[in-house]
Image (cartoon, rainbow over all chains, first blue to last red; front, side, top):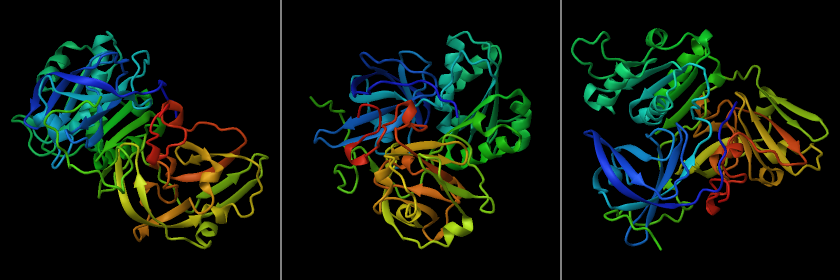
Length: 245
Length: 198
């Protein structure tokens, strides 16, 4: 199992919220200023720590949405009863502060120097680290062929919807296929449903192209998609997964 | 000086059963770097290889014929969740090491699928670790490491290798899969040893 970057000691750094962008009714992107942030590669995450007035603390991990480099942008979707996500998605305002450390993760990462074709398969907010890869590819001027299959409940739940529409026009070699699971837009080619072998075959890469596959989403989603990819002949070591929930 | 997050209140009290930075979950999340390997118990083997190359191997029938323990333990994952009071059935590593002669101090654990993790041999002995094959009264599911996984609950859960197939004893420490990319070499949750330098 090949692995990527190594990292030095990770210290907690103060982070100030600079701005927020609404993404959907349940998700927003938080842009942080983190002095002396060491930079990240696409696919990595940060640990984020909140401290209350009374000294109580809570920490969680969040994927970086921004392209590799110096900007720290997290896209956070509200989770029912989420102690930290509720604060990040609804309460935190520009000028408020927290702490972050990282970047963390040396396996679920994409290196623009790697010429292999890439298949990204996202379930819901599992799109976030894959979006970092899409943005990194564009910033690097990479021509590595990318295919993104994005499983999402309804058109209203699509993260980065305008940007994805723009990129599929402008980013040469990037293809995007949506798999709406609850309600598809009018005129959709495919009725609502989960990703299946036929969709992966039509919108993904043949196994003999030996793409690197990145699958991110809830556990059940990732288990199902990873099994389908292995069943279609993709080598298990070329299928990298990140599960949550 | 503490960085206060204005307007954050949270749940308001730290749970003494939880190591620092952890939160309680009642689910059983799955963390794996790749697809879940499907391992058939008809061909399953578990091998301890000493520093001299001597091998001790058990097949499924031999493993499940050994006396079992019923550890009830708390699990702490480096991704921040903890799950308390989980119930397992497995064979203690002390039982498997009973006839193993070694002067090695380190162990590198191998899994079906290629995963590895390292820890000191002494952390596997004295009632601290098991090869488990039942969880909460059921055969251990593949996504949780079935047919058999290592269980070392006093360390972060990435040390409890899923789909375990062997342990190699070493006289010099060798980092495993996550230990080589920034995760702590030892991983004690009560000392919050998540990453290098913690």
